[in-house]
Length: 135
Length: 143
Image (cartoon, rainbow over all chains, first blue to last red; front, side, top):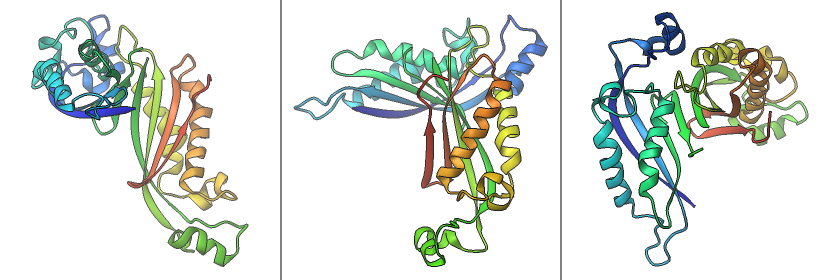
């Protein structure tokens, strides 16, 4: 059984790689390569897999999940310039693909017991989203 | 491996009417969608692509190439068209959301190798006829 929780944060980023030329950056990332940065309202859906506890009827207390997401994701990401203020984006490009993987890496180790992280889906705009299931 | 989803939109008209059914049966089957004058929708199409993230670019799919493919294969040919009269597949098949989804899927897959010869893979096509009427075509096997 899978249950999901949705949270939001707003952040800015610059999609440019030091290892590419200006022309290559423009070709790969388009307008998102603007060196001055731009931002999005990101929506994150975190899905947890497991069987409900026979006593509480819950796979995981969603209030606890919300607190985890606030502490480990939103407090880190919200209203930040990802390239400068959030690791590992000092080293890798903060594309929505890499953001989904990073959120997975932050949340997965916290889930012990009957709940397992099933998927992280990040919507960068209403037209573009990425889902990561851990491998 | 990540799953990247990109959404597009086009508007088109259609009429749900089967040559194999009587007038009464058509009306019974399709209701107001059988209106002989046709009607239209703002269709939304979401493509889900599965692939590894390139360690240099941080991208799993070249979005510029994907946008060109979508424009060439489906959006250009379907935008502001009468599906029954202007899309050959619907001369005989009824342009329901199911058949439209299958036709979009066929066209995308035919164009795919020219744009993405080495991957990634088209995993899923979803089409919204309205907010409440959605059809999904999923490919789970190897290409």
